[in-house]
Image (cartoon, rainbow, N blue to C red; front, side, top):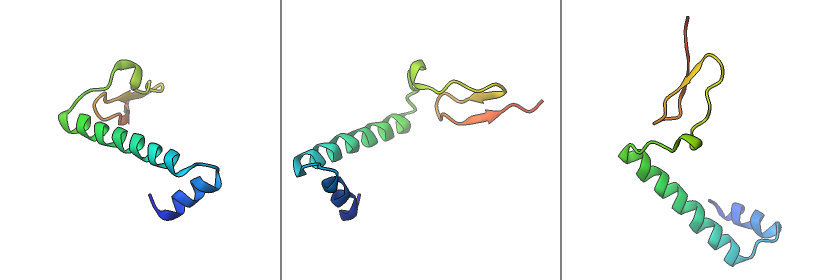
Length: 69
C-alpha cells in the first residue's frame, strides 16, 4: 500500500480511522492465509472453486488442471 492508495481512499470519503481499520483487517487476512498455506491447511469445501467441465482442482493449492484425454 502506498501513499497514493491512501490518498485515493481519502478522495472516496474514507477517514483516517477507516483506512487504519481496513489496513488492519486486510493485513490480518493476508497473515492468516499465509499461516494456513504454510501449515498445509485445506480450505473448507464451500471455499474451493468448483471445477469447470474437464478440469480438476487441487484442494490445497486451488490450482486448476485440465484433464488431457
